[in-house]
Image 1: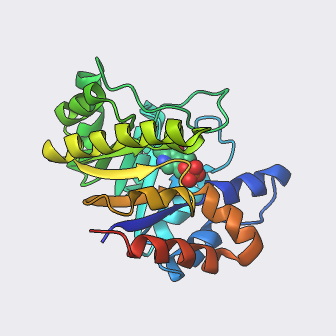
Image 2: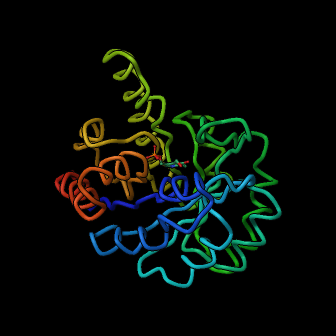
Length: 241
Ligand code: PXP
């Protein structure tokens, strides 16, 4: 069964608007777990715009499921990951000026660097995932890097402004999923997925995890975290395995 992992960065974003102590993403993470999330995701950005070091430290001590640590491939983040030992690290590109992660990681030409970067993490038992676009060359590079998972970037699909554009993006993603699975990579999907567009993946076999933040936390404002997570889980539970 595909699993739902919830990204709680947006809870931290609201807290940081006042730079206070509420709402606390750690409390939100525990509520997501109680509602059935299979894992929790946080992205500690270099500029600390939402998630803070304290959050990463606390989640690693309180997580009941799996903590997936989203991060840029920097020395600082590697040190933190080696310290907290998350279930997986998901390497993402990071630009200071972007609102959110805009594109996939460029793995091409970075294979040697990323193999060396991930090696100490793998030695510590940390799994790895590369957040990439559904581009055959990136998928091949990800395979050569030896990551266990790729997370295919669904943001362009989610942002499509017409059904035909969306179908084109969907076809690209479906081809990417198939190619990655044929290469033996485990495939996750994430970015911009919501309660409606996720239905396009209902018949796609072999997806390990859906990584979803914004739409769940948006719904949570109206109905609460518990219901928002349960609603999404209910949808995903009916997907093919
Ligand atoms: N996956 C990755 C790699 C991301 O950077 C993000 C956004 O932080 C997500 C998934 C979740 O995207 P959204 O918040 O749009 O659901």
